[in-house]
Length: 392
Ligand SMILES: *Cc1c(COP(=O)(O)O)cnc(C)c1O
Image (cartoon, rainbow, N blue to C red; front, side, top):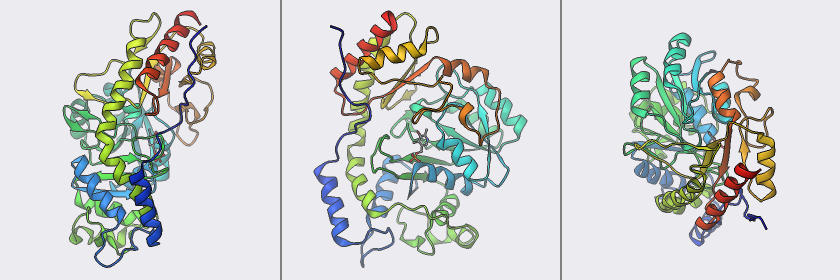
C-alpha cells in the first residue's frame, strides 16, 4: 500500500489558555477600541506595539487592520502619489500589487530568479527605465535576496524600500532582521502567517516623521499621543492635519491574543526549521526536482517550502500528490486558484513581459507547513512527493 498523508494543510495550532484568558479580560472590560482605555491604562494594542518594536529592534511600531493595510499606509507615508511607479517582485501574491494600486501607484514588476528572489540586474535596469523612487520588496515565501546588494542598488538610485515581511517575520540576513533594511517593515498576523489574529498587521520603522504620517493615516485622529511605541508629539506637526484618515486600526481583542503568541515566536521559528529540514531532506537529490538553495547569510522561517519541477505534466503530478493527501500549490497554472495567482492574473497591473519569471513559475510548486504537522508528518510528506515525482 502506498503511504497516505491524512493531515490538514490549512489547520493552524489552537490558541492557548493565555490567549483565551487575555481575550476574556478584554471582553469583560468592554474596551475593545484601541483608544478606549481606562485611566492609567496603556491598552492591549499599544502594549503589543511596544513589545513588537522591541522584538523587531525597531524604534516604532504601528498595529493595523491587516498586512495589506500596513503596506498601503507605508506606501502613502513614504510619499507615493497618484500615478507614481512602484517597483515590486513579479513573484508574489495579489495583496502586494493590490496595495500599490490602492495607494494610487502603478506596479513595475521585477523578474524572479530560480532562488525565488528579485533579479537584481533587472531591478537596476527597470528602476532606471521607470524612474521609480519606491520599491515594495516582497520577501515572498520568506526568500531573502542578497539584502546588502539590493540596498546598495536602491540607495545609489535614491529608491526608498518598504519590506513586505508577511512570510519573513523572524527571518534574518547576516543577523539583521528582515523588515529592518529599508524605511519600514510590513507584517501580517492573518491566520496563515507567523502570528494568528485572524486578520491584522504590524508596521515598523525607525523614521519618526514616516511613522507619524502612517499613524495619522491609520486613523488615530488627534489621539496619537496614546501610541507609546510611536514618535514624540513634535514629529506630528505636519502629518496631523495633512494626512487623510484611512481607518485601519487594530483592536484590543486581536492585540490581546497576539501578545502571548509573540513570546513564543522565536521558539516557533525553531519548530518550523525542523519541519522544513525534514521535507527538504526527502526532496534532495531526486531526479527532476530542484530544492531552492538557501544562502548561508539567510536565516529563514520554514513555514512553507517550494521546489522546482520544470519537466513533466504539472497537472498529473498535482493529482498524484493530492491522491495521497499532499496538497501542493502550483504557480504555473493558467488561472488563479485559491490564494495562488500570478502576474498574468492581475488585471489592475499593466502587463509586462517577464520571461524569466514565467519560466520559474511554470515549474514552481509550493506547500504550507503548519505547526500542527509533526516532524514525522513532514518526513512522510517529503517521501510522498519524492515518490510521485519519480513514479507519478
Ligand atoms: C498575506 C500576505 C500579505 C498581506 O497580508 P494580509 O494581512 O492578508 O493583508 C502581504 N504579502 C504577502 C506575500 C502575503 O502572502
